[in-house]
Length: 343
Length: 294
Image (cartoon, rainbow over all chains, first blue to last red):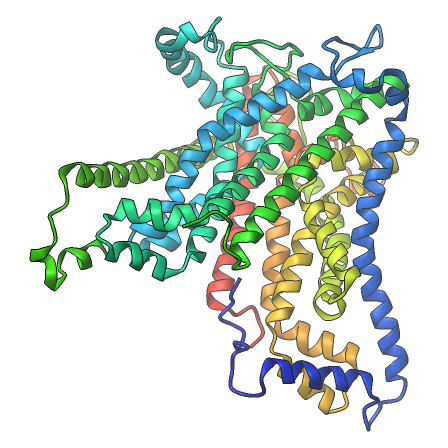
């Protein structure tokens, strides 16, 4: 984030390398004038600041420790079968998490299918097509979408989106694409499709703002080069811009996926909350995050609680892997290293 | 830019663009414009609908009274607004100093292995689903002790830290090295330089990070479900279950009562005004680059 408030570091003066050396000397060798107790205070300050840094590390370790230790009970009772079982019955203490994993994956993938083309389109439009004056406001509006709390998305979805889906969209889909089996059953509105659409709206700002950043890093001479060969604007975008930014855009998409996997409240409000595996997107489902939201505070019995925490642990691990992957992909582009296999 | 191509002096030598290529170009431009329209529709729809329903539902009773018993009309969310302020206050009190401290560490002392580990940890932490943080806060702070505003506040504080840490680091790194050297040259100790010169210069940027983190947690519901729990009465004590605006909206939205739906919209309006004000203030401050300091 460049902030115009700060003097730019590229002001005339000593070269950066020389500057670093001077500062290192100033710290290491004792200054000629030393205020009384300055060194002791420095040591206290450094320890306090380091403690803050270590606290960040400590919190993560604590999270992992708590999740692992609180879910040990089900891990011993069910092992890997926990993730393959389809039966979720707290009364008979049968716990299989597959319906929740299915619900999380399907709703998130559905969200990606809807959000990716839209977000990349918006990013391309803001960086390559729209007049400069429109750029700021447009990205501001799209980012406002990210500032709306999840619970308000849920509220809006219940009272506006769901009636639209059940009244218009679902009958239309059933008539035109019903033969695929994905759009069957009574059009209640509430269900997997509603969850996917809400998630899509929620992750569009993430994917589009990261794609925009990545597109802006593509060097201008790439565009000029392709245009000079006689390309139209779209050909320039396809060959000169998108192909270069591919890895970064994929990174943005995966970051969006990470958000969608962990999103709780809005999904819980519209997905229907029934632990079933159904082929139709009209059918109700249940996600890992929403079963936690609904059942955690009512969980009686140690095994039930432990089963829920194990779902939390699984969700935690998946989102961390997904996010780390995304970070790596975005870095390969924005750190200036060209992604492999490009023109 | 495409005009530049068509007006090249050598144009006469260049074969005119084929119809197919021109149509593809036009279609793709249209598609890009269409995506922008499709994305802006839900934005306008959500904001418009929240304002429309919220303005119709908000009144003096909503802002000053506590909820009425189930099914009875009237009442308000005053206790939830105050409860939210309490929880967000606790979160900021804990999260802001730790976030800024960790940011200072990364910028001033973090050019080593430990620094990279903490930087990575902070990024990982920002991707942890909020519901998982809620579970952990429950098992550490609530189990055996009971639901409390403190537990909710601490859960939200954990969510604030990564954003504040990374923005603080970025902002401190923008402060010119020459400024630090000037301070050292005058014999100012390192801690004094960091706090009074470096941090002071970067104040506006650091505040931006704090506000962004605040906007992010202000609407969080999931981590509060099993920490603050909610409450239909006034509570100002840190160790008691406390109502919060997002929680109350969540409960009311899932209820079958029209009057509660109405209040959920009013609550959403209050929440959205709060958050959009914070975000807009940040943008304004970044644009102007002034937040009290030169």
